Length: 135
Image (cartoon, rainbow, N blue to C red; front, side, top):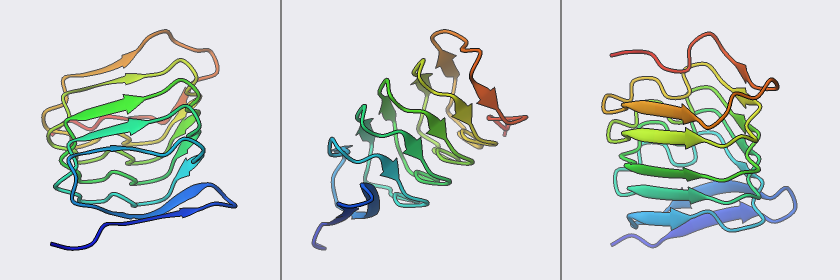
């Protein structure tokens, strides 16, 4: 069994590296950014809880994960390109009202995805031409 590795830049408050054999993980409160491709292709992780302190989910952060549940908190501002792309087990996601930008293909190739819910349409919300690419 490999040792868990979780690295957080305490100055920049960015989650830099994650390797843990766990099915559920809550990003520590105080982290503001989830770095590019930090959880990419994680087959163990089924549920991720993202606290209100996180304002940006970088490109490909969860690309190819086997996530079933994603909890996004109010306070999140930006979901970048392909952030949750190819998460084949993800069935639905609720986008908090605070989100102002959703990058291209943020939820592309999620073969089980049935719904992306926006609780209310913010006039500040900018979406790239397609956040979901059908398979």
